[in-house]
Image (cartoon, rainbow, N blue to C red):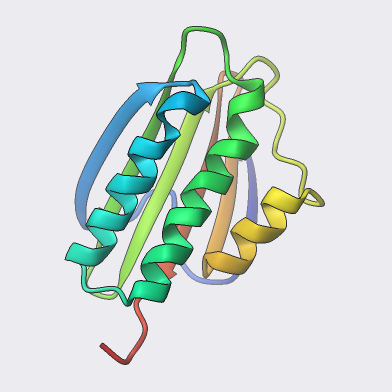
Length: 139
């Protein structure tokens, strides 16, 4: 397993909190559902409008990084973990190569700029991108 981390602290992949999990076909057509769910959950968790938009775009970029290598007819899983001070999001998909996303790509740069902490985990069958966005102090 590879673990590439941006930022410090505990893993964003396995964190405690209230969990919402959504599975969709690994097809770009359905990513808009995840963007909508992200915005709804972030709003419910009392994030600012700018933070909500950042999270929505970050989920879109994570999907853009994973979907090109997704196995045909597989599902993409998006798991939201809501904690008192942050929203953690993991996006996982079974892949053909289990290659980690290219860290020099535009999508990776956008993702890391919008999320406070980003990690990638791989195994022989799946790649997971985890991100965590802390809520701002001003609400």
